[in-house]
Length: 534
Ligand code: FDA
Image (cartoon, rainbow, N blue to C red; front, top):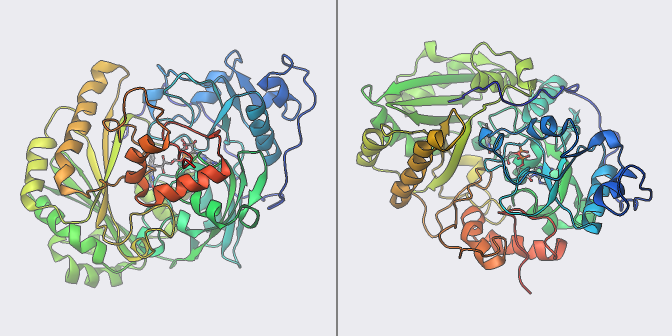
């Protein structure tokens, strides 16, 4: 589905994959910036310049501004014609500089958006839909990973990409792994803040489920850790969506044992080969399989691709598949045995990819795209799948459905254990993707119409009251019809329209935490958590 374009991002140099965090949990307030030499007195930049070297600060007039801004824009829709660009970009190299940015931003009424990997589907980490002036704190220079193999833990900076994390873990110990997203260029900061799942979700749950400590610069500019911030605040940042509660600097993770050999298969089936019957069966089968086996489906055109990761060898997978899913016709020729870290490269980048390729910061998908999501709790009937393939995948602009089965570990926690509520009873998540390869309204009209119309068609077949959605698959269409024109989109009652879809009953608790931590709503974007009214 990737469409590569030469206008895409500038190369950001890759730092060494396994390095060490210098200090882990000092807690304190940022020093008030004192001097103002380079910039006009009393403005945001002069405030910053006393605490942050000028080479890490960019204004729209800086020659490198465009290159830095574009460096991790992953949705090309927002690359060229982007309105709502930041006034300033700050690329901190340490937590004190992040603290200084927050202190100066508050003092000079400049809001801050934070960007880790830049994968936000609506670009909210670096652009605004409204007229507000803001600065971006871009964490791409803060990417350290420290793995403590014996303790089975790791500290990772928010600006690291998942590939860097996976690589560092495997290098420290090939027997360890961490459950997070499939695409190696995703940033840790945004991904963990919204939950984060990939091929290990059935075995180990979400990334956010396995965070055991954090360092956060809070909305006052103070550095907090789990102990100092308290459990409510700690709860909120593990799945409540990025940027409502401050800037997460780094995360402490529990790591998990994996066998030395895992098995991957990718079996494409056409509609003529029975894809619809297989998909119909898969819906109830996949969430009920043993937790060591994850089979997801990509449906597009007249095809369904069944892609699996099994935590074991082909020899033990074969009897499991022939007893549980014989119709798929899986046999030894489909088995690709490898290490867990190699499976990351294989699944995302293909058979020939090497483990080092997951460190590549420019190898991600580059497309103009619109994305939406759903959750399914009742299997969708065969006749509906027939309609989808016959009427929807043949339309102009038709895109892709990616379906990830839940069940096992991801479904085990109580719905309120973390802000991510999509647990018991969920069969699978659907991600809808429409994409196009050229800028402008002519190229985007059909794909955008397709995804919105198809989403409307799917309503009877997915979760209801609320129709659930995954916050990491950001969708600014959500709640649009329920929110009055001109309303402050982040206010509590209008925020419920999208907030309850992402968080169900947890939205109110998130808003209560927000009211405590950031009562003036300094950290906000178009879908940030609003403070609960008193
Ligand atoms: P980005 O930097 O754009 O941030 C996203 C949001 O988090 C923004 O609101 C931002 O302000 C905020 N934020 C970022 N860093 C923060 C920090 N340090 N502290 C506080 N807030 C912060 N998801 C998934 O679960 N599984 C998957 O397999 C995939 N696959 C995938 C592939 C591709 C190609 C894309 C583009 C996206 C995905 N995703 C995904 C979705 C992905 O998890 C989601 O977009 C994350 O928010 C991306 O995090 P980034 O840091 O890269 O984004």
